[in-house]
Image (cartoon, rainbow, N blue to C red; front, side, top):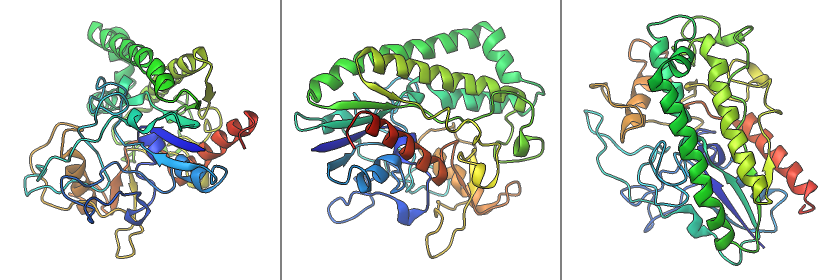
Length: 355
């Protein structure tokens, strides 16, 4: 029996734990250089937890990678159907004193290449980058830096440019799944597929935000009035994933409902999602990531090669704004969130009689 995990950063467990928690594939006896593994996979991701737990009897292939999309649209890095050409780490591609990457990592083959006639079980967590949810979050943050209320919501709902952008994002996602679904069945004709949705990122109302109320927090300039709109886009992506999965007779695993009260605005054990950045201890025991540290140069385009490492350097050094000893987490599940993903997929596997 063979289990293959396909997906983006939410399936790779990107940003969960420290350097020692990374799943890395040695290349020619080493871990770095152009052929290094910069996918950001964590040992606490739900595929990794499943492979050590209820699916321990399966041969396991983890093809997930942070930044993956379906066919190179949306975020535009590649992933499932086409090679992935850009990676956000960790680990981070070394950069020079100006923040420019010292080399370009070797592209990874399409994730579907991991599938075969021998594959019996597949989890798929994809769609957010194809829709480019991160761009919506970034736009809301950019507008929120100089405006009050709900500037991002107003832009996307009340301007022609914003409306056209949303329509294109939905079209790209639907078309991506239309291409993906028959290929999955062709590549793994014996497999059962489980499509895993996205967790709740923000509360659905602008009231009672807890730690998201006022001040400089981990969500920086995103106005609480825009948080419900952003969550609506996550829900739209989930609905399209659900539609694609069930129309092909596959199982959809809902994560949003179980995490609804554990969004980025919660605190302590009730918080299952990181915001844009989170506090880590950078020490010799590798409890936290050790990002590139270098003088902050000119601003770089978000998510361009080297941008993640550039931001990490600013966060780690404090840069006169941040507290320092923090790492870019770009709105992803923490370890508690990954445990919930694992629990929900396990429930679905049990319901299907697999475990």
